[in-house]
Length: 498
Image (cartoon, rainbow, N blue to C red; front, side, top):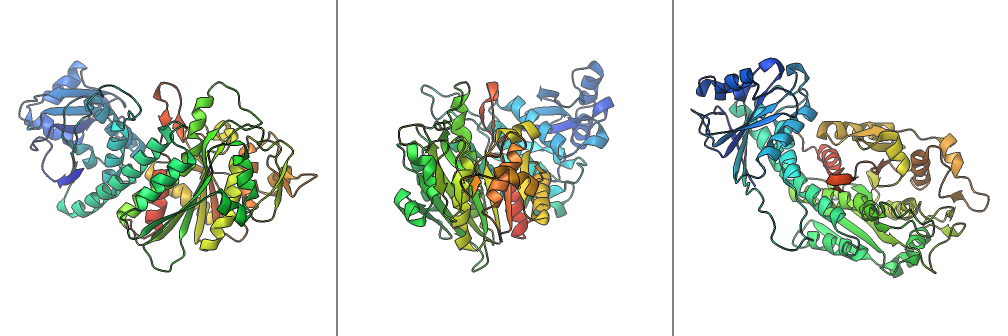
């Protein structure tokens, strides 16, 4: 994708499509004012006739507007003029992109970047623009046969700026967004692939391929024999019933010499039947998405390594299938984790924490500056937060706030959640050091407390993304979250934000 910035009026650029906005009560946005002046009041006349609205979500595609060089003008509703924030801005750009997605537009100019969006300067307006356009145009059709519907051949995105002094920040925002969008698309692709294709071995191959030709990025794959030598009895208990071999994927990007790395650990259950604690059949196909934590950290690595940031980043992905069979772990079995702590497995469907605890223990060898695990861990998180925000847990309040801020700024939002001994006490076992579940109350919290038992002395956070990692229904598919949040966090840590 190519990008350009321009201080020219919206009416003067020869592009296939230009996006402008109208507020409620007929107030014209800056780009719409330019178009209206060049066309002798054409936009205003359509507002007066009711053909153009300022309501959020409304859109009108106008072709061959007199006095305007663009082939089509896309007018979107922006709502109240004093309520335009990043979320409303992204929604408007997405609506506009969707409206022209079936056209043959090769160049888009977004003039909404001229509008006063609260808490957003040129960098973030450009970043949000590029990310949402890519997100809107994403299609997953690689498993379909027959002739594919041609996609919009978009190759250039323009960003309107108020002055030339904004050009550097806007360009940097677009370039960062290009890398983040690629990471999001990769995470979506991995999540959307069926479990008979996206196996632990496939994840390992993708991670290995990402490192090929990148001198600062290396990938190492540990097999089950390696994991057994390391004493990863908890992780191996999950894969005990599966034919597909488990993998431990370790990716290291070194852009900052000997500095301590940021470590991201992603849950990679490529299919989760629940094991012996079998899940209900309805909707079980969506358990291919149980590796979206792994997909998101691999996608983040793809984004960060492409940006060539001055930071050290390590990715650890325990990748397994959770299957029922004669060799599968049973409820009541006791397993020994790499840390030496023993776990009574009361429910084999609480398997994510069993692979993550060994991955967290393994990650200690990297002496992380900060370690964050990402997992579609609990249905209880969906009950608590719905499908809008991921849950943010941490043993460090400052880190929790840092992740919350990264989510807010990137519009990939999370919400701080509590921990504490009163919750951890629910994990007590009569027969082992701990149980893997803590009862029905506070299920997302007790899961975090379980992982917390393996992170003493580490600056650690846990993201439960069960509610945001994919969508169901007619829009079923992986979301690519929280690649944007994690990328924002790493960009900030690397000092690469304006």
